Length: 355
Image (tube, rainbow, N blue to C red; front, side, top):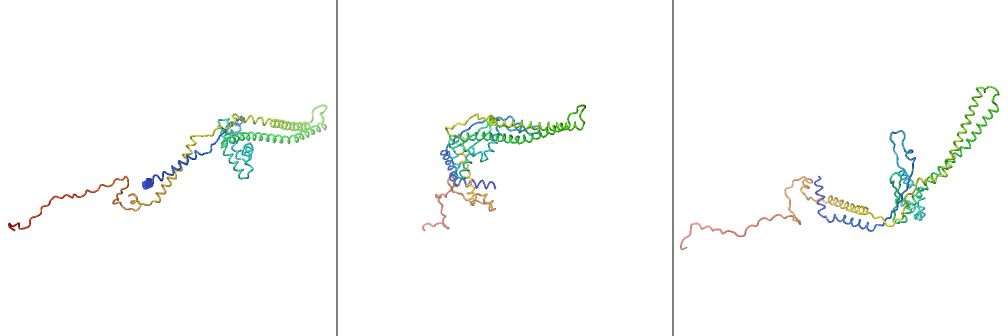
């Protein structure tokens, strides 16, 4: 069966070889034309240094002899990609670019611009503490703006996140301080009332009942004062974190290499070859499809194996063909036109003299 298929395919190809090579030639020309007329792309990139000392401790899995962790650069890369999936982050970055003028042209233009922004940005971790943000566009100024806007939007998002966390922490401890102060005042008042009612005896010691009650009141006052002191300390830390959140964030995410305005388009010989190869492969696929279709449609019996397999009959002989390039069978030798003289037989009875 495999032999029949191969013979059919080869017969289909060699019957019209130029016709089946034509799609590949057309695809090659189309690929070259596409590369020659392609819009030039400009690329800009910048690098940001990430310093996270506590990242390893926060990501280490407890309870295992081994530990897994990701670098600060990889964690930042994942975080930026997650933020780019949100419209709020992309919207805040687009506001700093030339794409802002298209955002008010309706929902279709809005979503198209957001998708263009996401397709243009590329983020990758370079080492453990470097994050590279790149942008590609047919406009060099826009490519530069996309990189700067993405970096600024991410740093500002981190600042706002830390600021909101500090605000929430301060509000939380502000709400605890007043109840804790009331508990301290109430515990102190209970202790004073007890001492007024049961003053220290002039002689001897207090009775055991009074001693136990006094110890209980003193312990309750001590606990209330400790809670109040802890809340005040945490409130002070929250206020300090609120004041330092922006400077700490800018030190944690420091832009090392500022992006530069691209002056020349990105031209890659490897990319051009790949683009042309894609067209050639598509042409080859079309040629193969044509060969296979012609082999399936053609039901002519062309080979002895077709008769044996399709009709289950033996092949007795084959009719020779005189196709161009085929060897014609040698002609049979023609009979000779020169014949030897044949003696005529004498008549019976002999000849008589004088007759």
